[in-house]
Amino acid sequence: MEQNILFHGILPALVSPVTDEGDILVKETEKLVRWQLSQGVNGFYICGSTGEGLLLKKETRKKLLEVVLDAVEGKVPVITHVGAIDLPTTLELAVHAKHTGAAAVSSIPPIYFQYGEKEVIDYYKEVAAAAEIPLVMYGVGLANTKLTVSLVEELMKVENIIGIKWTYPDYYSMGLLKNINDGNINVINGPDEMLICGLAIGADAGIGTTYNVMPGLFVRLYDTYRNGQVEEAKALQQTINRVITVLIKYQAIAATKELLCHMGFAVGQCTKPLRRLTEEERAAFLSEVSGIVDFEKQTIL
Image (tube, rainbow, N blue to C red; front, side):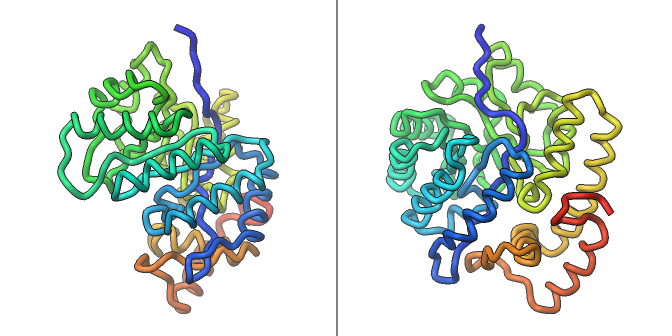
């Protein structure tokens, strides 16, 4: 079977630079995207968990996609997450993504209520048909519907579905995914702290929160692993994980946004009701994280 893996490498799960009123900070978004491009990233994933997509108004999500696509200038692909609590919003965002020029759409399975496999399959069929561009499933524990290997295998029979962003810490199952369609499935690693595990078991790419502040280090990790420099890749993962440990301590998305602001990217705070750091927490966080990596130069201290 001809292999058709669309996404490779490092794709930051872009934070959403927004005001407290929910408006896109256009200039800061452009600035952040261009800096990450300069660090060698291979694409972007927007409006997912890191991008607070489920908390943003649909018009804000549309605007963010348009701004990111303009800033990217066709250099790398952009995947936009279109999942929402209601199907009409998801379908509207999928159609907008098609017309705007996104490389693919992505979606968590339907959330909150209990859904059987038939409902999940029917959901993805509708989204894929509306989008008419590639669709990447998004498996994540925050959704109460688990995308099992057997369910993914069924969903891969749906036209336009090309793969999955696997954000479960289950690398046995991730390995099994690469047996589907004789390997012709785009498997993307989700957990930042285990990117090297995903690459070892067969992931084609990585999408992650902390790629926002460490894109250069993640690109080096990916490249060194692919080049057979496994020990160097392991060392990079260990350094990255020291940073991730601090980010998790202070709530990963809020801390990532604070660190970006400290680096000169005024991306705003988290969308309420997500947690925001107090001034005391912010000072303690920056003190803890500043001795590990030079984030501006993307070098290990």
